[in-house]
Image (tube, rainbow over the protein chains, first blue to last red):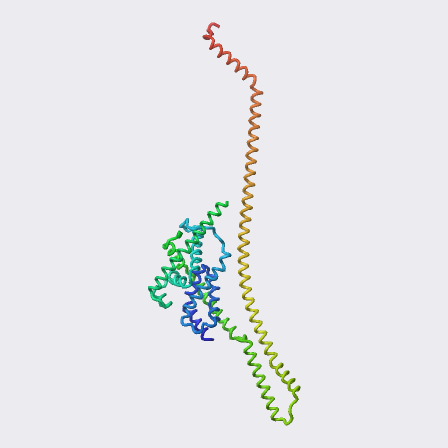
Length: 180
Length: 215
């Protein structure tokens, strides 16, 4: 057994659950997360030219985020489009409410996928993984203030992306109605 | 331009952060990851060489060195010089016999690897294509069912309208028959009654009514 494999098995024991939870949150599907988990560790094992990785956990997290968003991009053409529902019309647990809720989650994740890599990673660590600013700063080699600024900027960018997407959707809807 | 505020974004991200996989699926995923890692490592350190050309070069160099050493040894130990053609043929057959099986084996293992990679890629593609096809079929089926149900409802409504219309026509016919019957049965009597009523009314208008008690 090579040293890299030992390191990866150790990583799997220590952070496997966290990585799997992250993949589930980003794909919203457990079966896909399982497949991506396998793919992630095969990629980590086969990746050449990375030499000795100082922080396998950070490297694996970054790779997992990239894999999940690659998968989302590949699915974009095939997912069932639900129309241009922008605002929640129901807060109950009805099937329609659940459908709209899951559509909102999907749109939010797609918008996160459009952010720059650095912003995306910080946003995911802070808001999806609920890590503290100090912890993120330590992992990324930045100060806590810098991380706060990055998070704030990421949220602003996310709002712009989501706003422009919904604006486009409502315009499209008006166009469709007028065509009918 | 933005129709969504930061609180809504925070709410959505909070919901996403609350997505938790089940313990069973997490354990399963970790186990799968471990199995994949071990299988992948086994394949990498197995029969497949890291570089085919490098290994072939080493083997060829070793063969040439051995043959050269043999040639020099033989040259020194024998008083007469060897025939060059004979030596060439011997070298050729020796290299061929030593390298051919190795090259064949290397090529076979290389081909195996390539086939495996190609099959893995096509497997993923087929899976993707299959899921796309199933989704497309389901959408088509839903649309067809909707259309068929719409047509059926329309047919039923048309049938209902036809039945109501037929019933109305039948009612009218019955009413007409009833009026005809009344007319044929009481027609003359009604005319007489109307004439008498008219006479009486005319007499009342003309003067006081005659004293009937005298009669």
